[in-house]
Image (cartoon, rainbow, N blue to C red):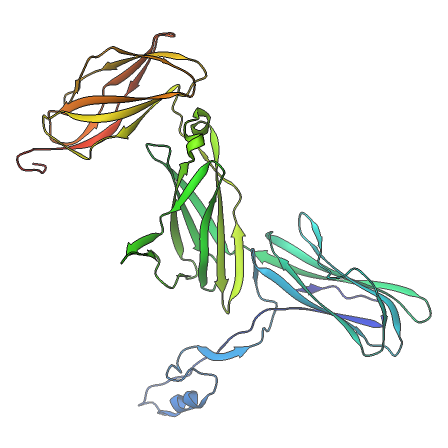
Length: 411
């Protein structure tokens, strides 16, 4: 913390100290083998040392607390607390004392003073104390500006300031990845890395979805009818370790049928992260609104509604498709079904589906069979808009596992 000294002699003295919790005492153990000259002397001294942990004297971390020796590090999302004291070092009574504390960042200036009213008088050897708190929300250089104004007993008005500069560091590195399912579901993977020098207890990592989505967390497993975190009971994140959190977002019913939701850039939501370090110091971060580029479906979107996981070889099976008009015009659709070497369609090709308005959709039941075992791709669907004479081909719509009905498994 840099302090700029004032040149003029003042009747009042200003002291500023950061308030932080103590740390565990660390010692440097000195050991040797029993056959060495000191023998068991070093071991006996460490056992008699009150600062060491009984039974684990060779560990550097002790069981005693020590007061902070320096300013230490402050990270984004933590609460900065400081003690401000103005002491009357003179033998005069000082009047109209006003103490003001501002925090200057790269983008704004904040007033942290608990009271903006002046104190009537301050007698010799008396002081004014104040404690300020601020949740740090910006990275980079911060300057705490403490200003004191007062009036002497002779009516002279004096004023001085002190500047305390400190750096705010980044505690976490957050990366996000989006995965688009065949339906309107979106899977979000959040990779969170602890880039501090001390372990963190991850109290909460949640996703606050936007108004268009419902979210479900995929970070627990069910054991004995109870949800258990996939990271265990003690959710500690060691320095430089990374952890992946997974979430599934589904559009709300009132938005799922609108073509505009599945086109262009959509807002997903924001992550809310709460952690604790050392002796319970709490930090919290909220990311900005996460956005993803939704996949483009063109004018018509063909999605699978129902399909069996396993079907028998050379036996018909049913599927259900959903056709959505993503354009801004009405279409008159015709369905053509083209057989492939493995997949054979049952029904009449060239069937007219009728008119489909913008943002409207229809369900289409279909029947087909497979002439080959294994994992087969369903292909060969073609839609034609008779108004504009445009054709839309759909290959690899879905996959199905084909087994022999005699042995029930793949050959």
